[in-house]
Image (cartoon, rainbow, N blue to C red):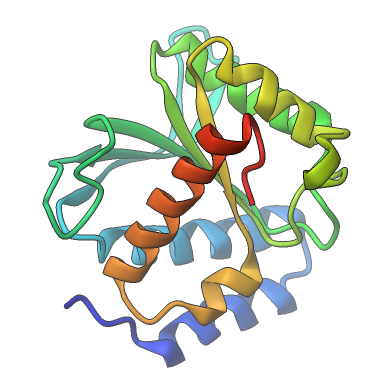
Amino acid sequence: MSAYDKAKIQEYLRKADKARTKATRGKAYEELTCYLFGCIPGVTITGRNLLNTFATEEIDIACFNQQDPAGLFQLNPFFLVECKGWRHPVTSEQVAWFLMKIEHRGLDFGVLIAAKGITGVAEHLTAAHSLIAFALGKKIRMIIVTREEIEALNSGEELALLIIEKVTRLHATGGRCY
């Protein structure tokens, strides 16, 4: 089992909380996310802060999934992660932007680390939640992982299980990513 060092997670979160700029806060969340995903069996971080050819879209974290049975074996080999350590829910505009980045790369899955979640009400698929539901029609899946959920994790296997549960719920409910 790839157990997390809880003190290390708290240190990343403290660094984010004390950050004076959005960029510094975002960098702390990116470092935390790389640590968390790096502990999922079979997942490798292949790139950070990568720009597309036209320098119009930046990818926070690119991952390769070797589909280890103890990890994310149900998901495709490539996926993206976007980090938003914001002090408020992520807006529809930012959710749409990340969904577009996933689509532009011909991928079907992405994870949005949104410290305070996203706007709207999950049960009613309002605001940003509606965009995630609409993306399913294009066979693009995106799930949200919050700070509260991160703080409850004990291992990479638990994060893998959380992701699989959220993807399953997304399909079963037609769009609820919580």
